[in-house]
Image 1: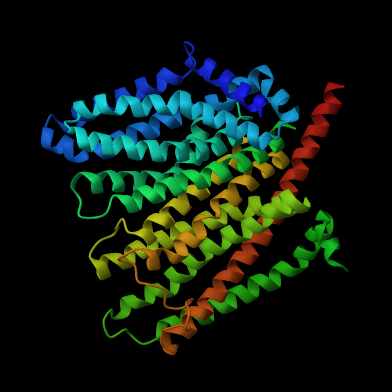
Image 2: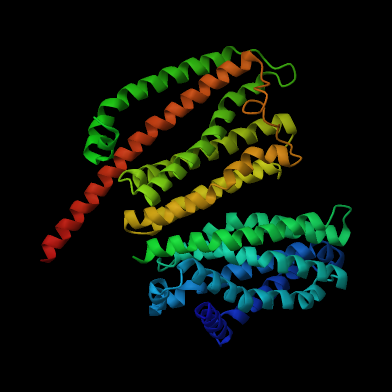
Length: 222
Length: 243
C-alpha cells in the first residue's frame, strides 16, 4: 500500500515541476477558452450560452494533451519496466499513476474553471455547476485516456494516435457533462440524472481503465 | 482433419484456396436473388419506392456491428488462447468493418434526405454509429502504427475489446433515447414487425452480405498471411546480407 502511495507522491512531484505538465494543461485550457471569443465574436450572450460547452471542450482537449506524459517519461528512462516487474500488481500501479495524474493535471483545470467562466460571461452559479460536472467527469477522461496512453507508449510518435484512440471513448463523458451543466443553468431537465451518470462513468472507468492499461503495457513492453 | 489443424497457416491457405471460389459463387448467387427480390418488392404505402434503400442500408448496418463482434472474438483468441490465426483474422476484418459502417452511414444519409428532410441528424443511433466508424479508423491506425504485426495484434486486441462496449449502446440507442431513427423492427422481443413482403428480401440480402463479408474476410486473411511471409523473407534476406 505504501508502495502505491510513494508512486503517487513521486508522480505528483514530477508533474508539478517545471515542464512536468501540470501547468501546461491549465495554460492550454486558458488558450482554448481565450481563442473562442476571437472566433465567435464578442457577443456576450452567445458566449454565455456556449460557455459550458467551451469549458468542457477546453478541459477535454487539455487533458488529452497531457495524457501522453502518463507513461512516456517513465518508459523512456526505464522506470516503467521496473514498475511492471515489481511486486505491486501492474493494475494498481496504473491506477495510482492515473490518480496522481488527475490530481496534478485535472484538479488545476477544475480550479481554473471559475476564472475562465468570467471570461465567458458565465455567472457564479453556472460556473460552479460546470466546475462540479468537471469534477465528476475529468476522472473518467483520465482513466479512459490511460488506456490510450498505455497503447501508445511503445510508439515513438504516438501522440496523435493516442488522441484518435481516446476520443471516441471520451465522447459520452463530454455529452453528459455538457448536458448536466446546461440543465443546471437553464434547464427544466434534471441536473441530477446526467451528473449521476457522469459519476457512474468515472467509477466504471476507474475499474476498467487500469485493467485495460495494464494488459496493454504488459503486451507492449515485452 | 480436426479443428486445430485449421490453426496451421499452410493448411488454412490450402483449404481456403479450394473453398473461396465456391463461397464467391454462392455470394454472387444470393446477391442476385436478393437484389431481384428487392426490386420486385412492393412499394411502401408511405415511403414509396425509396423504402428499397432499406434492403442495402440495414444489412450494411448489421454487418458493421457483427464485424466488430467477430473482431472481439478474434481479440479473445489472441489474448486468451493465443490462437495463431486470430490476429490475422482481426487485422483482415478491420478495413471491411469500416467499409460496411461507412456504407451504412452513406446509404442511411441518402435515405434520410427524402424521409426526414435532412442528410444528417445528431440523434443517438447515428451518433453512436459515427463513433463506431471513428473507432474502426483508430483501430486501423493502431494496426499500422506498430511495425511488428504480432505486437500490434495484442494492442489492437485490447482496443477491440474496450470498444465492444459501443455495440450494445448502438443496438439499444433507439430504445434508450428519443431518436429520429426508427426503433428496432426485426431483432426485437416479440418478433419482427416487418411484413413478410419486406422481411424475406431483407433477410436474403442480409445473408448475402454476410457471405460477402465471409468471402472477403477469408481472402483478406490469405493476403495477410502471404504478406507476413514476404516480410519474414525480406528480414531473413536482410540479415543474411548483413552477416
